[in-house]
Length: 355
Ligand SMILES: *Cc1c(COP(=O)(O)O)cnc(C)c1O
Image 1: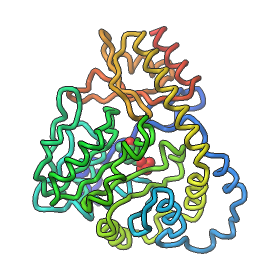
Image 2 (image 1 turned 45 degrees about the vertical axis):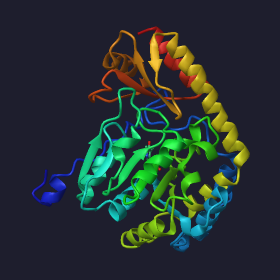
Image 3 (image 1 turned 30 degrees about the vertical axis):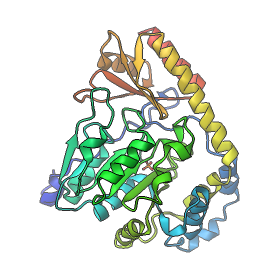
């Protein structure tokens, strides 16, 4: 703590992401990155990118990328906002939509960045307990007026809230903005039209959906995310963004993100590969005494029938296999394991067999 810090900064409790680095030998299953490379179309556009174009500022409203995403989802451009990773968009959304007189509601177990933004933007919040099987109970959110946020599929639970339940939740809190963080929705085995909140956008003006290219499009290092919502909510995000940073998405990121959307075939193929590996990993872990929550994401939330999670986590770490352990009430005996490539998953299973 420095004497030069403001009182406000002294009181911040920043988010701590899963560890990065570790070197080549590490089997990195701790931050839900995609084990497969981005589309070859991305490599091509990167190779052909003219560095001279970096002389100019990028499009302030990222028009080309916004158009691409609007077309991809069958929406209008005024329903799309893009940003430097979905974390940045979440920050703008909290700032723009949740500084209300009543508390923001979110599950007791969800993305741990949400309370960090609340602190940063001085937003009152109330954690709502998930039920005994870690599901969101929609009725708990009825009548909310200060806003609602949760991830769907939720993290770290990996569980998907069904679309009909989403519809009920949105209808029961018409005076709240409802932010559905769909960082992992592409890993749901149901088709997007039957899983995503996007299908509800045209009937629910209080809905904002965030997405990221970090996980399902293998572009965590690029930092591109987007939000979809009513023009009213999107305009609120633009107002905050244009009071903070006019150019959050750089020219290179924009070009590479567009390239990713241009290769739907590759996207679907990699998605299916992750789903197939997830199914194989669940079976292999069950055979080793674990139970797994029913994952709709690219990670598993697992618990061993007799061994403590902390010990397994430490044992794996000593063998250079990194998974995530949260020392939190209710999930202190769970491990969150990203679905890796076949080789990475085999390395995990081998390490478990020799613990
Ligand atoms: C990974 C993740 C994000 C952040 O995605 P970025 O676009 O990389 O910032 C947001 N929400 C949840 C639930 C995530 O797991």
